[in-house]
Length: 142
Image (tube, rainbow, N blue to C red; front, side, top):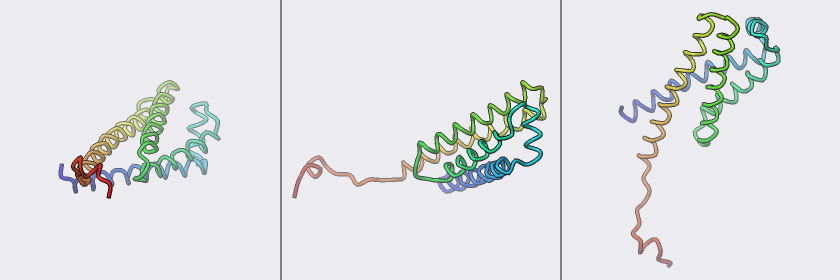
């Protein structure tokens, strides 16, 4: 894949993913009625929506920032745990395929996005060149 294509694809998909997570996070913080109904159906307290909503907003910001690689890795892990937990919660509560499938699809999208990010990072590092010095230049003191 060409570097420019990779960059555009990575940022377009990251933007789309984070936009969805930001909207879901805001809905969680606002505790919308549909979310409350889902929490009751799953047997979770409604205040969990605020906690997860805040985490999704912070995770989205972490995915968009280019400086702290470890923070970004933890955001990917946090989203993965959230999607796995959602899929298992719906599966174990008898939610049916219609409720289990969306978090599974988001998990697959997240894994694809993570793989794309790793490829983007490798490409970005390979295009960064540092000046080369001979051993004599490296140790000489003027």
